[in-house]
Length: 258
Image 1 (tube, rainbow, N blue to C red):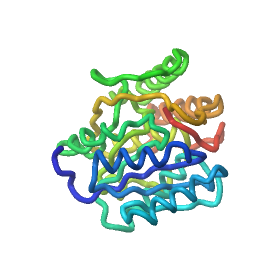
Image 2 (cartoon, one colour; image 1 turned 180 degrees about the vertical axis):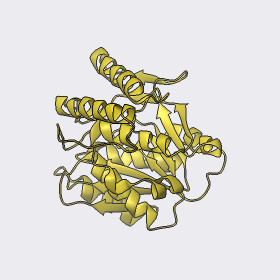
Image 3 (cartoon, rainbow, N blue to C red; image 1 turned 90 degrees about the vertical axis):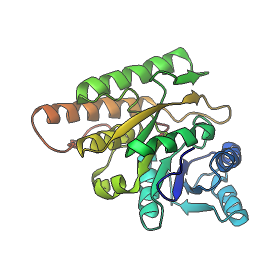
Image 4 (cartoon, helix red, strand yellow; image 1 turned 45 degrees about the vertical axis):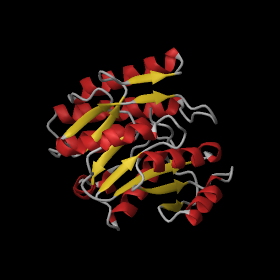
């Protein structure tokens, strides 16, 4: 693995991930030993936050940001990004805690920063794959990505995926305060903002594996929000507006974005 351009912080949002968090952090530290980890916990009732505190007490590379309640995936990542920008980290990673994002893939994503500003872990470029998903989930995911690509006019094949790497400069330049979307839409929003701001966005193949423990937080409301917002953004883009618009419409607390 090529050396990343500065210290790395991996932001891991959690809600009821006690069964998965310890393994995810251990695998991450084995794959990228120098990376720091920030667990952003939304007051998980299963004790995930308490486990995160124990991990942090045992290892100063692990930090915990406690939030007062379940406020959504997008909001959790944004709080993690803001925390990263208060410190020395030059690279910020999004990674799920449920095992679907293999920490062993992270070195390849970090290496790709040599000629990119944002690196997306992609299931749908050559070499990428999905393991143990029911067929209807993959059809929904592929369809959502195709629709987003056509509506927004971007060549990204996996714009809804949640395993990605940002250079610090990207997060500093993008208007994080204007990002109000959740779930699928948070990931689409961030990638589209990066493309429109002129940053170099690159996709790297990953293996996405369905979680073995716990339950997915996907819902029809998340899909409805994605379709609504992407459609409005696409129309705004074609009408010559410069930034994504946020008309009233379906909004969810957020969930796994894949």
